Length: 217
Image (cartoon, rainbow, N blue to C red; front, side, top):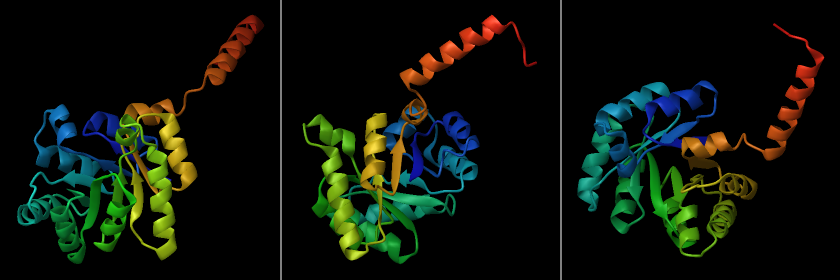
């Protein structure tokens, strides 16, 4: 499973990238706002930092303007994945970008029907939002499973990019079902290393070591 980190915080990206935990990065207007930086500047810095896809999102809502914005974003770096919303205009833009050889991340997917349309339009990635489905008392994992089955039935090349991941359980269940990629905040990725029994075992080891009176260095 590929790990994308969902942030525009370059320090957080660097920390994870140095550990080999970053296969790509996803950003959106909310994350750009949180960074407090210019979208073109921070996106270029991220693209220079990681070798994998970096999703940069258009903000227009009509296809013509989406295409214009996306083409500008694509000029930032070769590893840009143009991010468009799953609307009819977004699908139109997706088809235009894919036809030009650009990577496309179709985002805000909440149904198998939407995912099927995105694959037909040539999306590189489809981003089903797990956490937001959970918010309205639907199981986001059911959507991941449905998309996995549909894509496998017809050998679609579009990769399932599990998004809106808010917990370790979301990450593990997405991997178990077969999502190709997950994108999560740095805090969620780092929390995957945590386990109460690891902490308990380490605490006991340290106590026992202290009783030996020995030192390694």
